[in-house]
Image (cartoon, rainbow, N blue to C red; front, side, top):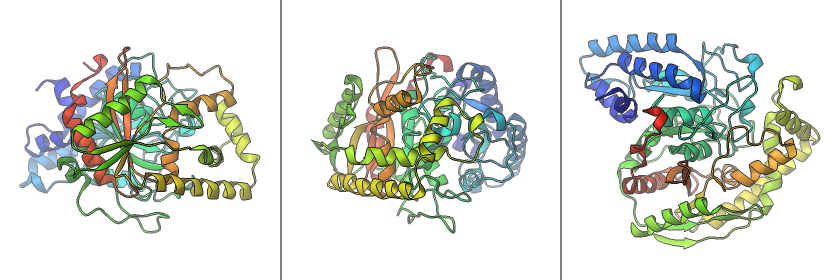
Length: 469
């Protein structure tokens, strides 16, 4: 197996090769560090590369592997590499939150999800790029190189998990951690032609920090295959004492769901999001093609129309408050300064009223979706934008452009439903276009199984961007 093929081998298969002692954790880590050193200057996928930490961990794991009498008893992803989004703390490693002024500040403890990832045997390669405070669906924070799409470097990989998504798509790591507070996993996944799962609210613990966005934001996996994404979701999931939201564990693993065909389902598809508008033709076509494939698989398909007017204003109010994190006003970019001003104009009572309105509107959306096991929807209403395309816009116009682009995503953060983003087709310019499968509350299993069924019909993970070769 050559180095490119190994770099694009699934995380599950890499773990199998390591347990069989056909490759070592050190060999795999050195492979990815070489690719990062060569490609990251062009892609801007990583803010911080922790080569010394990774090599030390890889050497220790290689020694343990060689001494293990039964390698099957090792953790499930022993010696496989991954990366953590730079909105999430990792002990002994800087966490910048996209703020240049604190990019060298060392964190003192792991978040709960990082602990779970480490306990699964992963080796951490570094921290992936994110927009400042994770507030935009493109990854261009001041003081850092912009993240770029591996399929076409003139375009963004999306945001706010843009660095993670570009890293996975370009073969800089097999899987990566992301977060999603309004489409920040799903958008980058479809922009880069990979798989991203926004889990149900309460599926993954936010320990030791609390919930700052009234349930909008969740952690989740990014991967090139449905099975890898499902397996990483298994690793990341679980309750920690004191969590504000929690769910019971599923009856079987999410990886098992990715290996079993679904029962015939009733599935809706939706392409318009009034009052914002309808998906552009290529994004709409991706939804229609997906619905047709699902129908050919024996599922019952029907169109769905729904008005999202009631949820937009309160959702934006709650989301804007996310930039009020106590950092000095002067270190924020123009857009985040404007968001902060909007947030501070509202009283705490007005914020709580917005939360209540958002939850009431979300309840109506869940009710409208409830007759269906899944809903097929676009992720973005138009293809990904160029790097810097909105740089000269006013903050108010930037927010409007953002809403006109990502409209299908934030309502699903408000409802707390699970969603999986998948590749569907390519534009004439060679950029990926994808869809999302939205599931019933707490039912990741069904949409993962449906996603695996679609993947088997169109094995998109076999395609690689030219830069990665």
